[in-house]
Image 1 (cartoon, rainbow, N blue to C red):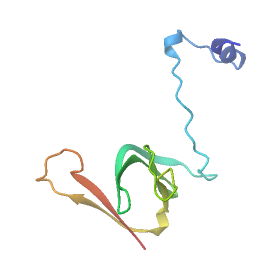
Image 2: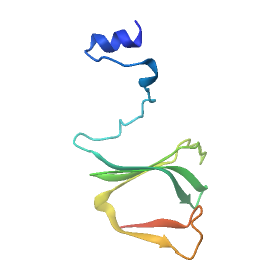
Image 3: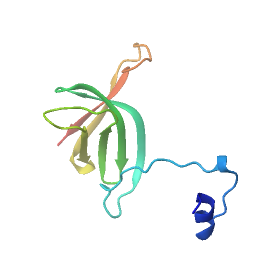
Length: 115
């Protein structure tokens, strides 16, 4: 069955073929019932003492802050750099960096202190 026929079967009428944009399915199985994504920022760097800078995205929900790497990182057998911090565990968030620094990569950052 073609895509347009499938859409029509569920009551959706599609326009020209170019108008249908398919995005890859994103894994959101970690979201709890009632949890909602508030902010999602891509191309964020996380600086780890173990592996250095890892590029990924930060997702803030009404419950937690989550970082997901977009590159594969190998740390003692681990393939993904993913961590979550409940918002209730965060004590302080400070913007770090200097306005005198050129606005290139890594000019500013966030320092997140937990309780």
